[in-house]
Amino acid sequence: MNLFVDLGAHAAFIIAAYGMAALIVIALTGWVALDYRAQKRHLAKLEADGVKRRSGRTSGATEKTT
Image (cartoon, rainbow, N blue to C red; front, top):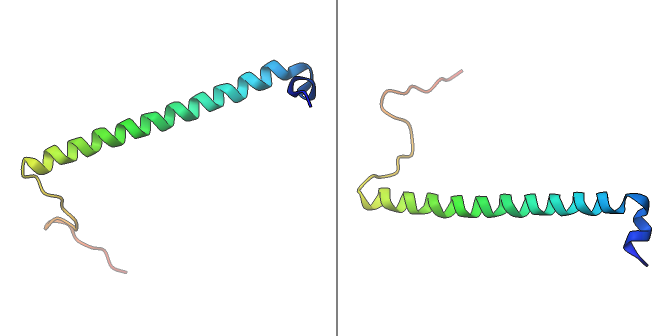
């Protein structure tokens, strides 16, 4: 079973398209991993500086009820 014969005359295009798609997925995965690490470092620095996380609404916000 030869891959190039099975793909026909457009084998080079098909293989290049799959290769580019794989490179893009790998690049995006790497970008997300690097950004995650950067965000963790930034959060750790903020916490070390005394900035606390806030959950909930600020005192000026009102909740709309229907």
